[in-house]
Image 1: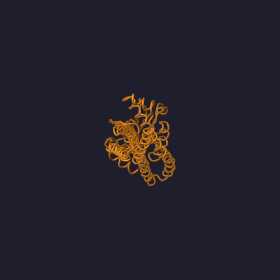
Image 2: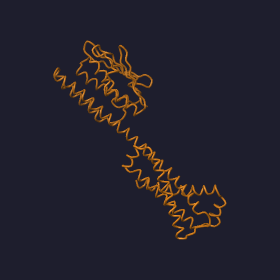
Image 3: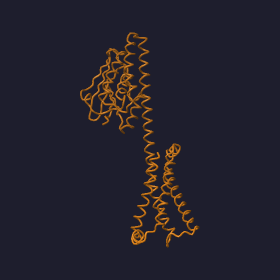
Image 4: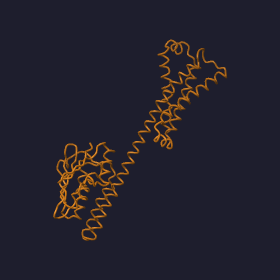
Amino acid sequence: MLKHLLLTWFICVVSTFILYDVAWLLIDYVEFGLYFFHQLNWSLLLIDGFLCCLFGFVCTSIDYFISRTDCKQHFQSNHLFMAKVCVFTILINFAIVTIFGYALLLLKITIYEGNFFKDLYYFTLVATSVSMVLLVIRCNHIIVNIMEEKVRLRKQLLNMQFDPHFLFNSLSILSELIVTKPAQAETFTLRLAKVYRYILHNKKDVTSVCESVNFIYDYVELIKCRFSNSIYLMVSDEVKECRGYLPSMSLQIAVENAIKHNMPQKKECLNIYITKSKNNILVQNSLCINGGRNLIESMGIGLSNLKEIYLLLCKFSPEISQTDELFEIKLPIIK
């Protein structure tokens, strides 16, 4: 923080001094030449340097003020704060230079013959412009940081919702197996531990398509403990060789949705096809008679969260469609 403040002060001081001299040169190059090359006024040079340092201190102080945590919260909720910072900077700078000018008059200190106050206010105008540019850049930087933090926290919240959602469904299956198929309940528990271990260790926003497919194989084997061989999973070679990425757990959510809403049985196998079409991964499943209601209307928290996490990561959204025989989720591939 100290390094940033010192850098801000240095940039403000140097920029003010250089820009004022450039403006002076463009407006009155004759007087500028006399001042610098004929008869250098050391008193005026000293005052300019002092004022540059003072304006730099004001800019740095305001920078520190808007960087404080409590001020960030105020800034986040009020977009007029940037305008208030600029107005405050103008008032402070002109108040300082006015007090400074009158102090020189009271002390009867004459720097040079001419309209000293006019030149002093010109100098202040340049210094204030530099300060405002630096502070606006700082405010924009804070806005970006706040927005990135909000997105990060939102993604973290959604990921936290994915894990309990998966665990709740798995425990529901386990409780059913304990009653109906006690022997398979133990196998299911071991496979659940393996799958959930992956979920706990995978805290990335995105995972490769290949890694997602490998996890889906483990997940389907876990689910088969409940439905025996009533689930058929087919993954195309094109998907296995895809080099893109998907949001973490997105493929699992799509497959879980197919199983949850169809309840496969031995008499009617649930077919799940994972293929690639252009820049999308397609997850298609057949509709079982006992579970073939309109899945689009019955989307739960999983697909809703999946849509939101896509918008946060890449501004795209999964497309969901359904026919009389097929339900499809189109997952955009993240490059």
